[in-house]
Amino acid sequence: MIRFDNVSKRYPGGHEALSNVSFHLPRGEMAYLTGHSGAGKSTLLKLIALIERPSRGNLVLDGINLSSVSNRKIPYIRRNIGIIFQNHHLLYDRTVFDNVALPLIIAGYQHKEIGKRVRASLDQVGLLNKEKSAPITLSGGEQQRVGIARAIVHKPGLLLADEPTGNLDPELSKEIMELFARFNDVGVTVLIASHDLKLIEEMGSPVVSLNNGRLSHNDLEITSHG
Amino acid sequence: MVKTDSNQLAKSSPFKAWAINHLRTLIASLGTMTRQPASSLMTIAVIAIALALPAGMFVLLNNASNISVGWDNSAQISVFLKHDVTEKQAKKLMGKLRLYNDVNQISMINKKQALNEFKKISGFGNAIEALGNNPLPHVLTIQPVVDANRPDKIRHLLKQLNKHKQVELAQLDLQWVKRLFAMLEIAQRAIWVIASLLGIAVLLVVGNTIRLDIQNRREEIEVTKLIGGTDAFIRRPFLYTGLWYGIGGGVFAWLLTSLSIGLLDNSVEHLANLYNSGFQLKSLSLAEGVNLIGFSCFLGLFGSWIAVGRHLSEIEPS
Image (cartoon, rainbow over all chains, first blue to last red; front, side):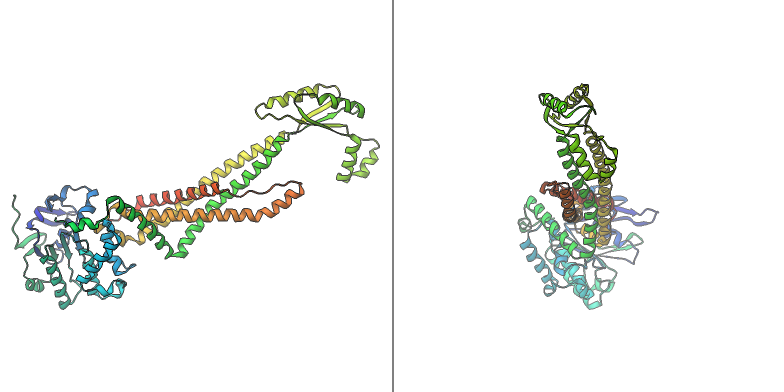
């Protein structure tokens, strides 16, 4: 699903955020990405989401080499990725329902279908009764779950999460991680960046660790050609 | 990635999805505007005033041309006879001239009659009586056959009239009409210049409003890009907002113009009555009004298109 092959990312100014990273996350697998802040976790996720482009090496997502994708194709690749942010990135001028419906509207779903899918998605994160609420009236954990509902509503093949439990207490964090594990159970590939080592250990999925932009620990197979 | 069949089926056909998206955005952008009624109305008012000004000028100019077209047809030649020509001789000459092909109508203003009228109108009655004799000559007035394609015909007639030995001077009262037309043309050009400048002002107003709108919705644009919104999808609400500004501005400009003309109408009718004229001020016709709205829509759309092109690409998720 995701294949890093000697990928490096150097920002203008010379700072190298990732150096020669290679790993392979197979389809349907779930893995954690750890490392201290500044180790390159966010950069790695940004490369997958095509927010940044690799400076060197090959990054293949679902058979598509992201190094050579044209800007016009980016939106269509992103539609198969659900992205969850630490700071939710919800739109506060509209209801929970409208926030979650956004990916479906972009993809051109019919009105009736949108209602059905949004409610199914809110049901999965346990917020079915909040569809008419304004996001600002929800707690931090609930807002994060709205963000998750939006990321899964169009049934993407890949879920990326950047510190999804960063602002939550341990109990809520565990709930969120279990939610991701449930999506993984139905076949979604999941990659979660987190520095909550204790929680990750409890969850028991493979871990990829970064230190100063280099792989320091890798439970996944290292990319090999073929 | 595996896409389930149900995923495919739930999506509308590409064209239908496209149409639904457009309709949805069209209505949503109107909704966004009505949520900030004060600022939306102010923008619309600025557009409306900027467009109503040249539109009103055009209406007045058109009315002015209409009046002068009427006068052009009633071009009149005044034939002043020599002072020693008697009334009898004058009538004989009138009979002769009536036979000319190019003469449509001819009538005579008797010198006595003219003097009486002049006394009455001018109020110089006493002064004129002091002169002792009548200083006015007999005058023949001729309505020539007007052939718009052959202006030289009238000139030819004028030459013939001037050759008569009893004629002191034959004069075409058309010069002022020509001058009026020249002035109207200058006015028309001036209005075009003003209209162009104000049109550019409308573009800038819409462009700036949309630019602020884009800045205010930066977060929304970033999120939309992150979850796979195409540039066209992101551009659309701003273009439609510009279109709505154009429609609103155009409709209000039409109303403003009609209202202003309506306010003038009474005074103009009063003036026209004083001239014994049935002249009435014409406001914008339906077609002209629709054109005004169309032009306004174009400006709104174009203005937002410029703003979107300049500022949307600056926003990328990070």
